Image 1: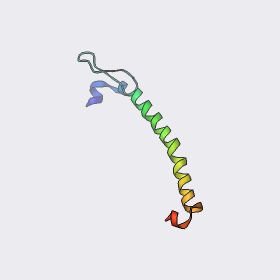
Image 2: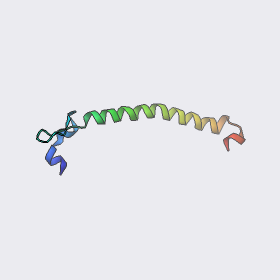
Image 3: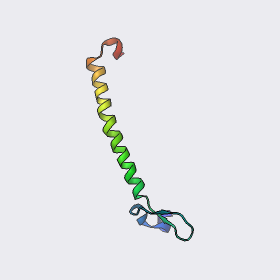
Image 4: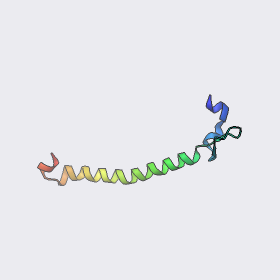
Length: 66
């Protein structure tokens, strides 16, 4: 129902102006920023978690690995 009223340009525009009579909604900038944040989190988290797993299974003493 919302896409029928607003249209598909909702996903391709950046304007966000909810003023009555001049309603313009677009989420492109929000999607872009969310994508960048997710990429940066993965860029930091994946190597850190793999390194921690390798440390626990291969290098850490038994009392620490447990």
